[in-house]
Amino acid sequence: MDAFYASVEQRDNPELRGKPIAVGYGAARGVICTASYEARRLGIRSAMPSLTALHKCPELIFVPPRFEAYHEVSMQIRGIFGEYTDLVEPLSLDEAFLDVTVNHKNNPSATLIAQEILQKIFTQTALTASAGVSVNKFLAKIASDWKKPNGLFVIPPQEAEKFVETLPIEKFFGVGRVTAQKMRESYIFTGGDLKQHSESTLVRMFGKAGHSLYLNARAIDERKVEPNRITKSVSSETTFAQDKNNRILLTAELYPLAKEVMERMQDENFYGKTITLKIKYADFKTITRSKTLPQTITDFQALWHPAREMMKQIDLSEQPVRLIGIGVSNASDDLPAKKYTQLELKLF
Image (tube, rainbow, N blue to C red):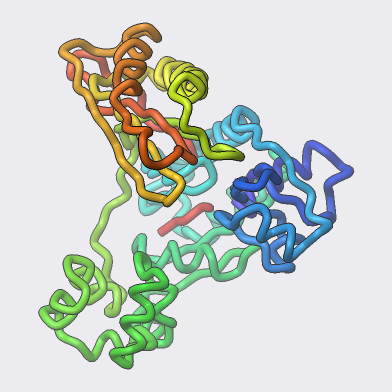
């Protein structure tokens, strides 16, 4: 989907249309979840601190996130996908891989299917999406970002390897800022440059990622679309406007986070045994403390009592706390976890 959260907000509030908006909070320690394309053209991006965004764009409008609304739209889109294939691998609320090699419409053209899906999404949700069509996940992911927003890009099989040879290394999946800099220092700027190195050399330079880099440079990706990915953990956290070192206040802040986690566990039918407490101090040092219970956590008190006791063990003597979070993992074997229903559209 194109600027999904921001697009939903602009759809539901006509006064926001055509204006630079950011989904998130404008507080001192707020972070941008996503930004409208009007804001992106001014340099605003997701994960940017809110104060930095306001410095770049003083007229930026902040809109609090409404995750229930986004989830509802995501379910609509998921329903559209299901009309074409059961092989849907959700990556997030607004992004998924689809394998339409064999599809419910008996349509031999993935490109035509992508066009139909994009039109249905717009008709049913009044939102635009972008799609990438190719022979594997690696290429479909790249293609889906190529003509955003409201675009469709196809990388045919016979052009795949040549396309990758000209691809900047920053476009490769898993290549972040640090890895890209390391590559440039080794005179690797494109997929063609990457292709000149042996697999063993790339593994030596980049660790396990070297295996996939070697294959991707040759337009190879053998990963299959995996539908029904299972929830592995549920968590929630908050960053304070001002650091806190009072244990009572911190425990009070932890309470609504624990309530949110419990509600999400019940909503997703996910019940785990391990509680993890996350603390980030004022100097950005982060610690986690975990406790695995003998029984599955199925109600709030079973979560809250151990979490409160864990909070008592946190050291507050040297640094105040800027962020606190709580999560539950380690799904129980006897209680099935609900499969993800979340859903940028990628087909091959």
